[in-house]
Image (tube, rainbow, N blue to C red; front, side, top):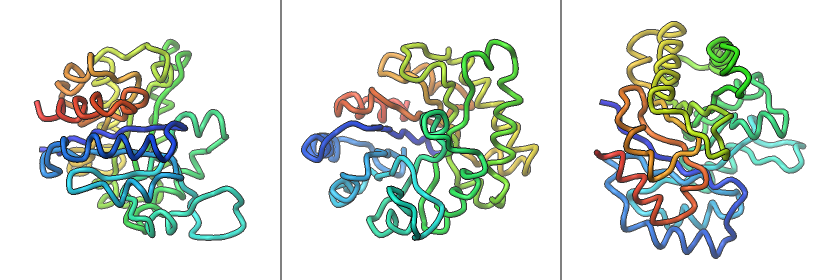
Length: 251
């Protein structure tokens, strides 16, 4: 059995006061970490405040990181810096990083081992645009992303990796892939991992769905056999909703 993982991605939202109010509201309400991994991926400015208050059943993640430990990279944050704060996860290769900031698969391939080297679990995002879904090329795109992104990882590290399938056409649009479409894509990703590594690795890796996940659809998504959790945007900003979303993983 793969332990479910529910991760909130706050994106560029919440001041320090907002973040503190959120964590005080959720920290004593989340299920045991033995049953589900609950993660909040927050802006860099509030990571330390959240780590100090995460309690036993919540872990804190970043939304991005550089692959170098230090250097002349103005505006970047290194995995060594994140490790020093006690950060447990980092989103890597989110579609907004790829599309808005030109992040390449080659850069992502460097970031993944760098995260593991600093005891940070990467949440690798892959997924297609609407035109790629409609013209039938989505599988080729995702396979290519995985081949390049994972090129520097052993099977033992891939087993510890989290992959988030995020159909870009469903992020922040109000459109959601049906549970069946989401499960088909997550199953395809699992098949790619089997082909690149082996069945044991494919069975071990956790694959999330991300794309307009809400309280209203989380139960149907989590009922699918290949979906091990969710990477959640807007709905994770509300403390009560985040608690409900995490608890849905127990059903």
